[in-house]
Length: 137
Image (cartoon, rainbow, N blue to C red; front, side, top):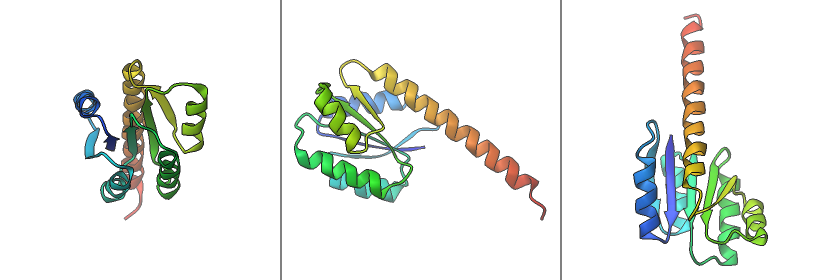
């Protein structure tokens, strides 16, 4: 499962890469610090998961994220943020975020969500391989 990370924080990036490397069948396929770069990486690497975190949020971030989500069906978008006020949570959801977590508090939840996706992806792969083997030649 390919993951793209987009953040303006080197500290958060290092933490994410370290944590994500603990999950087997999950590959950090690209790292960017702008949403424009992230969109290109998502397409190039056929990413299934996109994790983003920015300290400075502008209205254009929500608009750009909305475009990324619309142009990449099936992409799971996870936002890590320091701004957990209801108005921001609502804006992230409107922009296409599937999950929004407080970046200071919820790394365990992030890992649980990603482990679930890896497991689901693994099961789908097994099913697909099973049915491919059963097809008459």
